Image 1 (spheres, one colour):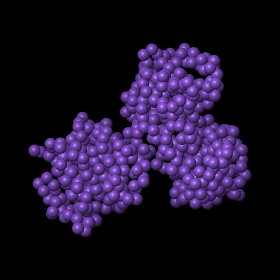
Image 2: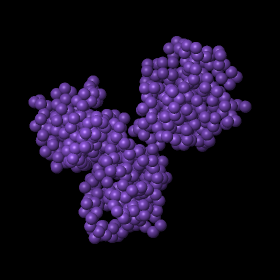
Image 3: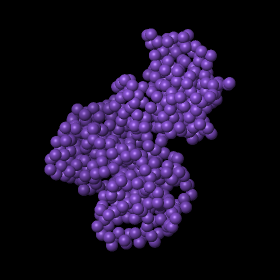
Image 4: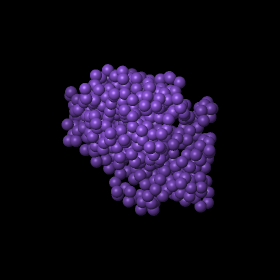
Length: 358
Length: 222
């Protein structure tokens, strides 16, 4: 049996949905399990022992508006051995044209399974038409739940929890390169997929100085090379004596997962590394971008909040106040600006809960 | 008829205990049950006494002063006595702020057929008597649609084969934390095989006033 899981979304969704792999492997121990992911995220699965192969697709921006490019990709996928079961575990809208990609990988008579879509992000595109089985699930569940629901739909009974994979070599690499001891440092995430999710420099500065000066923890910054300016501003604003190192742009995703397993606490915005930290069993403080009363929905533009909170009991979320959020969203171009004005009292409470007395 | 199920209720004699007793008496399963009430010295003023509740199918055990709270674990040590005391094939818990739907025992036994344990869903009520919804977080274990990252089933939602209850009794007796059901769930998940599930709410419980919003957030309407 050959099973393909098509997972074309961003890092956070990949981590939250990765539990589908152990669930399917437990159900079909001898099947050939192939994963289709964006090439930029293939490294996330470099240490995954559950898959037999990985097909890396170019970023969706390269084919969304280029039908010839899309056709070439689909033709290339059809040339691969055809599959008996094709799964798309994404519950949210199909921004990535996963429907035709799933169909192209299916053998005649194969099961092609995806969530029933209620809306299409593109005029004339009906994602539902590409699936033989459409799964219905309640909207508003945590984003990590949809992997398990679709796995259960095809017969899996194991729970499908977020997971990251890394090796002892990855741990040794990050420990050696940055001289890190287990649980002796706090990791701070710089950057997110959208600027409106990112904390403002003054928030970072306050957090870094609290962690470094009050709690006397060493700080490690993580993020993409593109976010180095954020890291440099954080380092420049740190009080004298605060120990702080940047790893931005220096870690593979497997190494990042290893680092997350070593850190005492992760602090950062709603972004992929936050979900990696939670999946690695590390305590998390989320710097959320929406207030507590934000609508609980797993679909649609602007989904946020509870459905994407860290999936761990060892997490706290610091949120902007509802009034402040409302004011912010009325400002033209707010999506291009970072979030300011977190309550320092809320930050203090969260840091005390996670670091005091340890 | 030989009893099939022991119901373990740690209690201080709250008035709501009478509602539970009535709901146990009204079951439509057609099987005999034993209702075991476990007390220490703590009593609710004006509530029923053990002697007033004695019946052919309902027994009381009164434990020494303070037995019902070991560290921060309310009722856990009392439950451990019930688990050891039971002689029926099946055991379950029912706290004195719980009441059962008429079909509860029947539906649970159907769900438990072929399994060593089963769980049901819990309908949650506010103290004022409003339905908050169906618990989707602490009566669902590892169900894919659960609303929290941790896994557990509330004591009141589980029914287990007596042998597993006996094996778990030390967990209840020795814990000093408010976590006996988490320990039990973890033990059963690890050692008792697949869990039977009713998939539908068959019990009711009142949540504390201070937790109404938390429960509302983690319940579904039906």
